Image (spheres, rainbow, N blue to C red):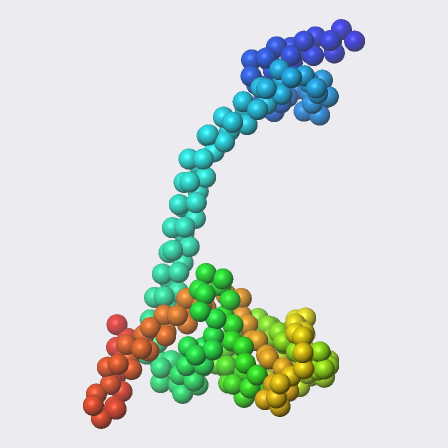
Length: 236
């Protein structure tokens, strides 16, 4: 009993010196839970806690800024690496009609927010989705298990039936389908009778490449001569 009373006395002295529970626990070997019980409801201890939190925040701010800056630099370097890889691969890819087709589809119908890291194209035309799927899987070599399908359906369209339809149309297993979104109203025309299909790949790296290829293709196309002959692309 005297030992416990002495430990508590020492803990109080340490606390009044402005030390944290962690520091006192390390110094005296007293569990932090015990310290919390001893000092619970003591206004002077709560004031010390508030001061410690304030000091920690002041000290943490520069560290957080440095960490944020280092993290940003790291990702900037990764993004630049993807852009460089896209530039390296472009001369070979641009000779493939399916690459151009997929790139143009994305230019017209794809998600343009690069920061969300989602390569996404949505349309109601099965042939368009099929071509873009070929672009991802056959040209860019994205494994089928990385390609996600989501449907947007009207209430009068049965989800199971239309998942099977799109699965067959684009040759991708039902396991890659996610929960469909159902919107109000009936489909306005036969054009939307299969719903809207969104084909997605979660990859900021791939999105960096696609955006780089789009810029390169615009430059490439603008260089064609008056007869419409496309120039050779340098691999340098």
